[in-house]
Length: 202
Length: 202
DNA sequence: AATATAAGTCACCAACCGGTGACTGTCAAG
DNA sequence: CTTGACAGTCACCGGTTGGTGACTTATATT
Image (cartoon, rainbow over all chains, first blue to last red; front, top):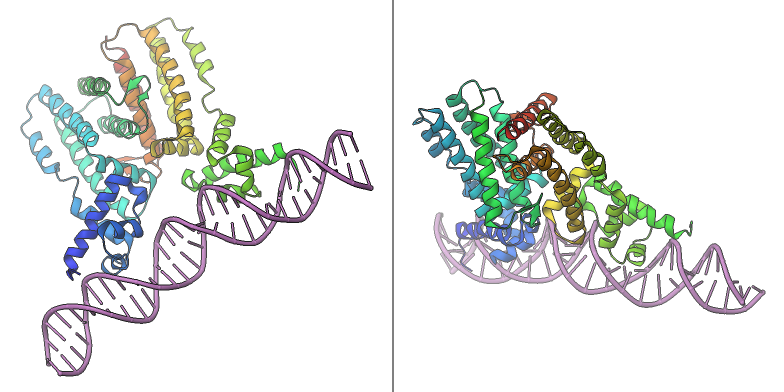
């Protein structure tokens, strides 16, 4: 009808987001996406070669990890160890709250765990760049520590990811209520404690 | 052929395990399972009502978390704080190595993250009982601590789960090689460090 | 030996999946 | 005014999914 290629492409890209958010990444297929976009599925092949091509376009537009620059700039203001600890806490707690609030991001994290293809690999690469940049920032300010900061940070970050994803299916995990504010307050507090203990141990 | 109901049921149950291990939980369906078992799929409905019924039977037979008794008995031997730290390290590192070695268990963890139904809820319930029992054990011996032990343990355990699952799709995460021995050694070391720091902080 | 019960087989169903070829309608360049 | 390029539509393909009814065959009891 509209006879506007770019608009149609955008409709398809947007439809991917809608379906991921509403039905999860497993429901993303040519039939569902085209139906959601109100467009024939053959256009996916014509405009994006492939469903993967469409997904790549979707991810590229999303640009989830664009806050690196902002964070790394904050590292430069750091002077004392307490500053470093405070910023580190802020980063990790921020990650937790960000993922917890963003259901679309949760779906992508889950997708990464389940599937390996060009798209998820591309996302992983981007995420990796962000993670290493932040770890380098922390590493620079703390200097020589007894503990392996990147390893500890990775473990804790993984814990954040897992608990958020787990909270989608279950209420209580290890006795902690993952669907209540008090439960997440406990997690957040522990997060801060672990960071403080780790960075003060040298 | 064999005309042996119990043997046929067992064939189906075993086939579930084979498929989970070989193709992942997403591939578990009536068609695939019956084909693998060399048995008609209608027998799944006759003997187990449902695919879910078959999966429940599978899980019940597996009994993944049967090592609770052994662990809780070890708590009684504890006398000093160092004993407690040592045992806690042993438990968490043991968890890590166990999951890392057991691909079928990894599939179930992933399944738990993706799906909520009677089967996964039943597994979760069993896991929950184990986790709480262990945490109670640790809690008893450490007494009042500054940190929230259950919350910290949950975070760390989640980290273990996530990293193992992530290692299936990606080599490097936050600069740590999740497919090399040295990478896992770093994780393990950090795990022990975090436990020690946490339990000594009171 | 006849019969009932239950084990196992077979053919089929509707719904969905990804994917493709042939088509129609529109718009702009010649 | 014609023609060609292209946006968009439609019908169909082979394959797989979960699920069911009708059937055959074996075994145990009377």
